[in-house]
Image 1 (cartoon, rainbow, N blue to C red):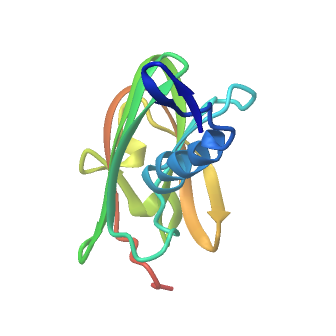
Image 2: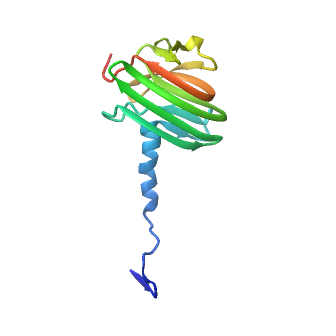
Image 3: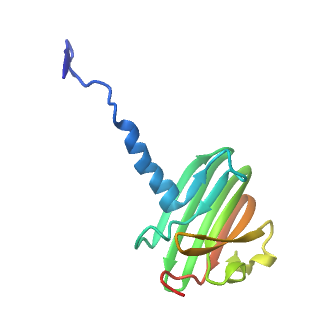
Length: 151
């Protein structure tokens, strides 16, 4: 420890950077907000339903154009995911679904009738099947009948 006339001075930590990874895991891995400028679109939101027995999460993060928000829950009636995409941004959102885009709603409507939502395919991440959509800035309320462990 270094001392000065004001008392002990703690030297600058060389380890603090490792804690950033833990915080980033909560935002990216649980709340599901991933920002990578080299990807197109640079904002991806995928709820961390594969991160153990977690049944809900809420978080926000600075994105390239403003603040992105994610709030999801997994209950007895399925999965819900509210997302907020900042102005002038486009995001890819992955919604867990055992029947692809046909099993997903936005605002209570099928994706085919949802304004601004473009279905871009399906993806499997860590054994979970997702419907992939692109959405412009705005607020969205996605839902599906997906349940953990369901075939």
